[in-house]
Image 1 (cartoon, rainbow, N blue to C red):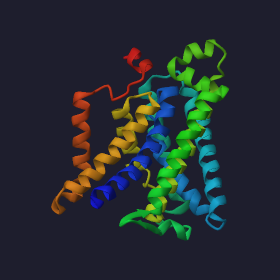
Image 2 (spheres, rainbow, N blue to C red):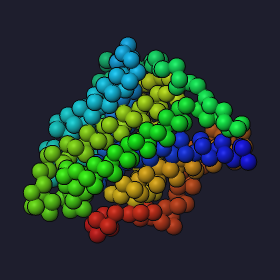
Image 3 (cartoon, rainbow, N blue to C red):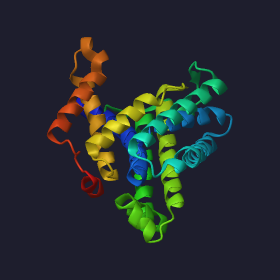
Image 4 (cartoon, helix red, strand yellow):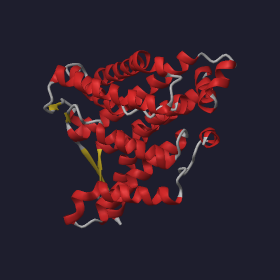
Length: 294
């Protein structure tokens, strides 16, 4: 029973990480219909921001990193995507790949390609033992960050004018513009929120590994897109559900696979995802707006 509970805690923590990444991807997709593969580089830049500001107290470091990634995300939208907003999805997709490669190479030039160790607060590496159950502080941090971010997003989307405009734009961007929504403001806000969520993922990944590298955003953004697809394109609740489901599948594969097959855990995880999509190709909770477009 304790082993099952341990796996459950690990699955929840990993699901929180994937859910944050998936929501960050889903917000931009919901507003612009852009599959932003540069989101992985936002995660990577957040980790390097933690390295840049590491000489400061950790609270200030994390806050500055959040602001820095949000700024990078907004500038990326302004420079790379604003001029292509009316282009078709394939053009936007190619543009996101170009931005991804550009940001990754810029970091390689600035910091070199080898991994770098990031100074972390001492409490990050600690664990709590509760009735024989081991609770790493990193896992608790993932849960807390996910709860805070999701609660803040719920308040933002339901209680603020800008949040309501973003919801309207996600349903029908052109109609929202005709009703007075400022497109540039809404899209910039979507990228800023996406950047903040990417930095939250950066904090969790860096806290787990203690290192940063220019390619560290590839795996989380891949799982994020898988989670968004499972949950339902254009639905943020579905993206979060998809993130948790991918986290649970990953930990389940880790638990049941024999040692000889453990190195193929990601492959078996994706096989499980394919099985889900065969029976539910539109995702678990597809957006009504996306379904109408299809």
